[in-house]
Length: 111
Length: 109
Image (cartoon, rainbow over all chains, first blue to last red; front, side):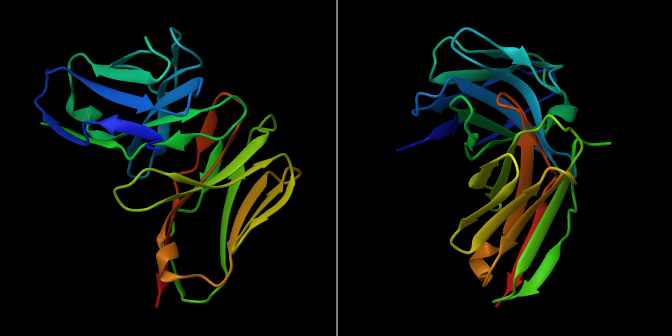
């Protein structure tokens, strides 16, 4: 049982480059989330989705876009990467009224 | 003021000690309360999940929620070196939760 799988695990980008982070879950969860985790800041919600085809902004959405074309996948895009987006990105999923389950993260460095 | 406040530690205890980890929250509408454990370079792992006030026990772990004082606690009995990790509290509604910044715990053999 894979749970929540994030790809890639590590990535280094140059300022201005774009990339997409992929999250896949095999638990048939309706809700999916993207967070970033920075030292001293904790987990901050970027965007989330309450079902296939839906997305909503979280606490820190600027500079990111998301898509949920399939129930099991949630993509996070950076159109023009900035050094301030250097972080560890976590994807999570949950059933309704249930706690979230996390992947092991993507470490992203932007030079 | 953050909606969920947590002392970052680090907290260092000898093996076998009872550990008490605490958080406060400010939003009275929060109904769900969780504790996650996060090992280095890994994702948060759900430890305990409670709805509303009260206690919940699972093995060496006990979670307490006091909604009157907006206080969340996690107790670890007979702590082990394998308990060394960062512990995140979280609370919120049914769609979104707010996380504390985490308390780093080290259990010394």
